[in-house]
Length: 219
Image (cartoon, rainbow, N blue to C red; front, side, top):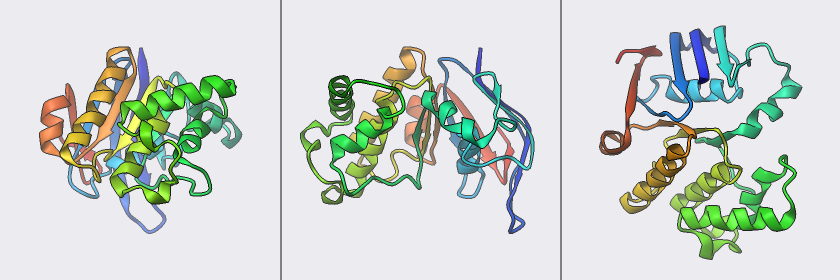
């Protein structure tokens, strides 16, 4: 069963930039896909369209059987309950600690407070930050903040994980930790899509690789 499917998707921005040109792509449940390509190739745009953060200029996008090009805006938060997002423009909340930043991802799931705390601690453990649970995000390095975003994306146990350059600000050891965590989730059926320019990691973890260039799938 396809977790998502794009059919002849185009995305043109108001400034005239054509970010995607006729992209068709599908990912099945349990797949781990890497998107590669140079800066400006359209990787980030593609992920944002799947997450319904933006809408295509034309074409069809289905996520878990729903045509998200047609659903009303008010239905989008419900769609995202099953999505884990690690995006470059995500921001942590500096008025609460690391643990609360992770717990916030469970706000829409109805989890009990005790269960939410337990799951948040477990997610932080997976990214090596359990001991920083009570820290303010401002006290963390850029790489540690990135790992908190990964924990937040995973804590709700999504069926689809979208990650845009999740290892960009972390050292090699923690990049491996993040990718191993993604692979562990993928092993139990989570579809994982990672946009990355890191050829060594793609070569090590990419069971399926799609290359974009100038908004077109070229490989």
